[in-house]
Length: 423
Image 1 (cartoon, rainbow, N blue to C red):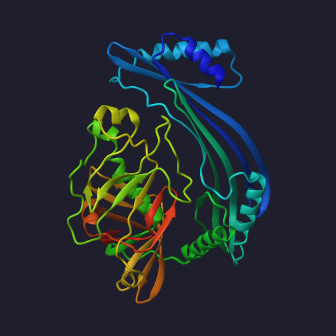
Image 2: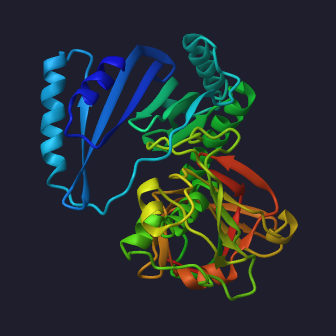
């Protein structure tokens, strides 16, 4: 790092620079069924350098990679080439972020622990769920990462954050005779809780069994549909992504402050973009510019009240500097479990991906597995697609009063949508 800084300072044509260095150590296990096939350990450093040049009343920038094998002369050539490219970029002028220093470890009960030990304990917890007749984990991969991100710039910023996280990818499979069905599971965590992992995987095993038994309903039909956290997260990220400073500056945002997103009788959305969520692997203290992250309320009682985004666009718009916030928090609603069960509804268990198109007022997607809740009974269904007007869905949606954390989302564990067309 010191040598790189010296070489950048040596080039008198630069207005400024930013260095983002990510060091990642990993321990990875690859299983076919229960058989451990491959063990891989990595220790990598990825260094991205951005140079800035003020020219002709504008600011240009260009980014390049630096590798440990490079000689000083090779780095000098990279710097000169990036400087010449920056002269071709004509952004409106903006300064680099204010200086600041930080060195912090993000909370985790895995911080400082041996990655190999953590990976083996994780694998044991996964396979503790692999005990059903006809059920198996067709392929399982376990990843433990320790990541250190350091951002340094020419104005005196020097910030480091260290994060330990884990990920499990597995394919629960049910086989009966010549018939086999499967689901895909990706589970992220920052605290190792073997009992919670076993329960999560066992839940997916039960779901794949029900997918085998699932029937395709007679369609089309109209029903209330309950979304789980993964799909709620996608919807919230789409809604709030439209409120970024970049979208406002480029005039591509659909909504602005003061716009009312909900006028019906459903639960009102209260949404905040934030830097950290307890237990979320997406949590961060600062963004790639080294800007400390500030939680920002974007939607209050169904009305747009704020925007967020990176340093550059915050500067252009003369808005508060929030940083590029990776997580989203949705306040709970009023829907109780008893109220949800009081009328028939379809619970989406596995989707190919929620499709949200703000500009065409659309929400939909393919449902691979769903549970029809009716008269106290649950029937598994498959082979369905759903489709609705997003504005109508937002007006009347209900949010559960129970909460969860999944990935970059914290909030209600169910969102009930009314009057969805199923095909």
